[in-house]
Image 1 (spheres, rainbow, N blue to C red):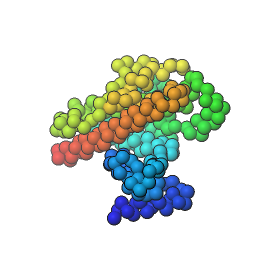
Image 2 (image 1 turned 60 degrees about the vertical axis):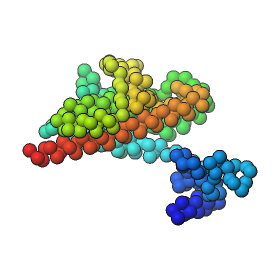
Image 3 (image 1 turned 90 degrees about the horizontal axis):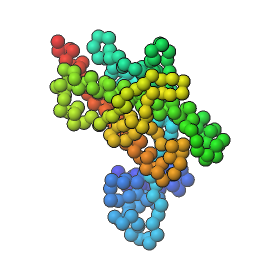
Image 4 (image 1 turned 30 degrees about the horizontal axis):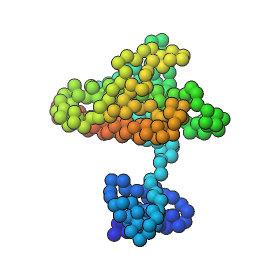
Length: 262
């Protein structure tokens, strides 16, 4: 019954020329929902029609949604860190600054100056720049570089807190669960001092679940096919970040329980 209702919604949306998030293809199932809202055979074509209808996949989210998700992730990681001990957990090199869809990561330097990395993608500037360059590739623009460095800095902070969690008393109680469910995180072995032209962070070496957190773009991957494959790997890295945040939340709940029981 639920499937029939969903197919009716898809059919009405397509007939009206509007594609919604409810239109998708269930890739995990042998049956897919096509444009006319009819199930197909395992071969992917309609039983009553020799020509296969086009499939409608779930549209990608808008950048405003992605930026908001990064903002919520920044707020969660910051809140977890603040609830550790009496004074909270202090990241060694960065400060997470939750600001909704415009969150940032501040990098502390030896001379007390702050370098700010964006934890959001500036779609307006990207659109204007793409029209200007008209497909010409070259050095990565500042707004995209800042976003990549922001994600890398976020992962470095998350890795620091994960290591602390595993060594903590609450982490020892949950060691098996955390060890089994944490996605692997690899960060650069050395993070040098930032300068005007060099960040000191090798973004390519910030890896979650075997995939780099650097966002693929026309500047780094001019070939569309390669860029599409790398985009899937980037999404996998983001899923790994969300997974690790979830288990850090499980850990900090255990920390709170232990604190109340004392």
